[in-house]
Length: 158
View 1 (spheres, rainbow, N blue to C red):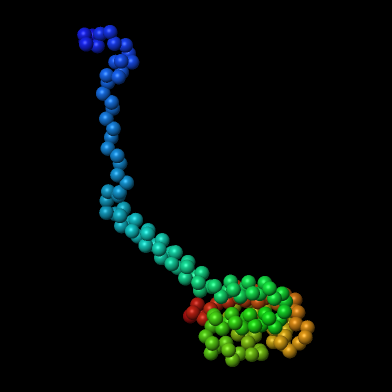
View 2 (view 1 turned 135 degrees about the vertical axis):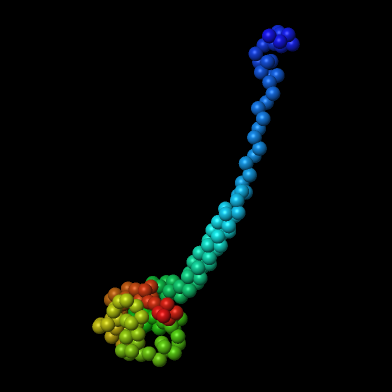
């Protein structure tokens, strides 16, 4: 035993030990160029996805506005006809929509979405509603809501 450590207890001997050396901190930056490029690509793709989502939301704002307006009119066919006309004027060129009336208007509504909800009684009620006193038509609101949600705007039809 070493004479200079004579008479020391275990705790004092432990205090004389050198501390364990700490390793260098690990760097969080990528060490290779591949990871840097991958990170940049992910950031660009994320930016493009967010931009596309924002553009989609803006492009469909008229649909949300029309559906919320439909919620307040009930089954009043004249009001529904006006909402459908305004919605179509936003989604399609004015020249293609503004001059349509009667059966041509119903054919346009049916051809611009996958359903045929405006054929028959619902379509007739939609055309004649401004000229009648009793303008309540059952299920017309649901048909109009379906058209607003599912029609294909002009730029998507190519």
